[in-house]
Length: 506
Image (cartoon, rainbow, N blue to C red):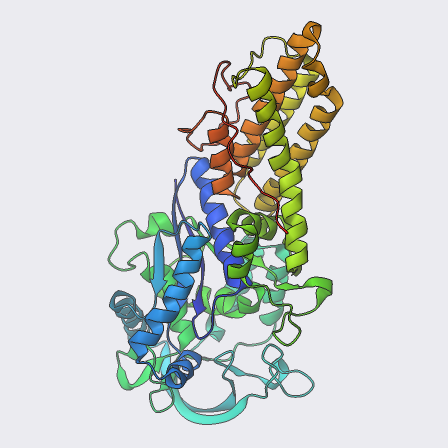
């Protein structure tokens, strides 16, 4: 089955932050999870390169638009490569092929009489690049996200009518209960739909915003950044020119943060419906990363977590695992360098130390060869089979945030179980007693086989560490497929001690 996974495309007026890293890591974990299940996955992430905020940054930089956009886009691309994110296509909305499809879609909707030109007076938030109702503002008349009062603007623009589609969207949400996940966000969208929808302003005059896709039917205007950006999800699939579009789109999944719920879950499905295209298959919505103690991150407080710094301190896999393991579904989650270091210790103690101890034991007492499984007792077999069954069940489930979260938790719990087994059976004592040779070999085999299963399950989360685990077990050519058949580690296989998976950090 072909599946399509997307992240939002990110404004590039600033440097990539931990929120960008998380969403794109999450998409990569989902891609690897689905690939292990035997599905073909097309995964996209990238940068949103138009709009007023980006325009202001270009003007302040002293660079040409192309120089600035390329430099900033590469900041994101390079970070994602460093994070082990295996994207299939890196979106840049400044590319001609994207602009062409945006213009084709605009012309189609315009020709259907769904776009009208009219004068408008409203409150415009430059941070959101959206017009706001007074009811959208806080008690001080400010945008709740950007803490600034929007500007009163009066100008002539083009508008796309949303209200005729409101009831259709309400009905669609109610008849597709798993469309928006977690369900609390579906309820939020339904709350937004209780009142009539204002027409969506889909243009900006070039006199104010020149950085954008020119309207095909009026050269004095560029396209509203959200209309432009949302189209990336289908322009990336070469919508209108790809005979396989419907097959891929039928299994599409959008990953977004909760702050962009309205454009994605109201504007976008209505835009698609107007085109005659089915809605995305699923939305997966996540919360924010906030500082330790529930405090919002800010440079002035010194609690901003820079993903580049984390990679330098702890490595890529420590960051990947922490972000997946510690995101609270349906809410916000806390992160700090001390919390990341504590998460690193869990990985090091839970998986890394166990692996190193049993490998060294195998090297010293068994000439580095995997022992036979012939003398395993019922408890040994129960532990291995239980871990195998747990991961088999997980990888048989449909993709969701809950399944990915459970996968990370299951890795930790499996590690806990094997560590407890290892400590209870004391193989370092058994190794000194010739009469306990069979029991010693059974404990070592059980531990090594459990590590093989854990390493296989870790692949979507921490691909580099997963490969190191399998390689240390003499399985350098392992294919990471969701086959958790137990007792497949062959006796006589040569193990490799190597360097620690998670070396000590200060």
